[in-house]
Image (cartoon, rainbow, N blue to C red):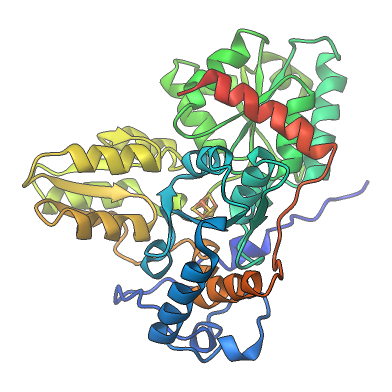
Length: 402
Ligand code: SF4
């Protein structure tokens, strides 16, 4: 008998590298930040010692020199010292759509993580180039669904369910590699975001009896639960066990098969933190992201995507109090933008997404200065046939809307 070793993605092991208790997320020189226990992409040494002010000047000069040929996109979870340079900011869905619509820019510098840059490249025009400033900016959740494991899962499921169309529809969260999106595209499935997961489920159930949902078990379970699917009809597929650790009977009875992946940032939030926030802040509203666990979702007042969180807090009356369960850079930014409301993070430990945090301004300067000399550094490009198949799954998502 062979046993399979559990492979924990390195990005998951590195996830708490920037966590701290004193709440100071001030940008330091890259040399100082290199001391955090994570992998960084190598950069020419001259970028290591530049101060924040020097980086600031350099980036501003490069932006002026490059003009409209280059746009910078900034995900909501990026640090403030990156967001301030972004032409557009948003969640991965909004930014990818933005990239697809901004045809006059030849280069898109995506300050986010690798799967987002891949998606932007898939949606961008053939004459556009997408750059990720630091290639080590991955996503621990996306890393939890490796292509070969997902392919094995798909063929194992076909061996139990038969290959007839409509037995199972693969649905992947945007936070997955292009290869996983391609698997969904060529097998009649689609991509979804945290804003339109319920619409994607309805789309899939109109075409099939059950769903394979990758890679975030929590978004999948929360979506199914809110649509009234009983918990015992949603089973967990472990990529580390033969046949996912499920019996053929469990697979046949399931409505949703959830890939065993999670977000290391959003699974930090707990019901105890919510109880404490309510105890200490009478009248508080608790707003969390759907990548949190089901018990947290049930204990919260509201849940929704990062765009939903930003819009809800933006529209809330002055004097309202918000305990928020999402990435700390977004929570801090909202607190700064709306000083008339009390906004704080549920988690007392300041813990940014360690992969997003790797986009240090020195990396942004490096790629922009490269462009000024005609050099494309860190291009993210998805080749055929993966590109076409992933595009199919993304187009179905755009059809679904949400
Ligand atoms: S917050 Fe979670 S899902 Fe988002 S990039 Fe970071 S690890 Fe990935």
